[in-house]
Length: 155
Image (spheres, rainbow, N blue to C red):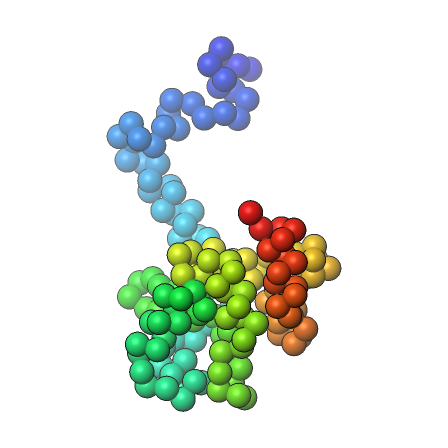
């Protein structure tokens, strides 16, 4: 059961201390992060920078960098490739979906793009247990929804 130091009940033991030179623990963490990213990329359609330029009719890479730095656009960086979740773009209008840019900024896409992308696929009580991505693709997501989610569900 318990050994007097909190072990045995699911608490961390000394062998779980990642800061004591246990080289195996960061590898496990990195593995979990890799698994999370693969899972996210399998759930969310993405496009590369060339496709984004074609959608937006723009060849200026600084424009994309600025939008990402401002948190209006999610860019998922990894393995030397930048991927952009496709739901952010209105291909017919050749623009970024306004409510997507608004939500991205609210959920911190500039500082945590992977977390922001994950937020989009997470069901919300405010949205009737549908994900923001699903509601957006049904063309029903509004800024008021995003504000309500921020008020009632986000830190």
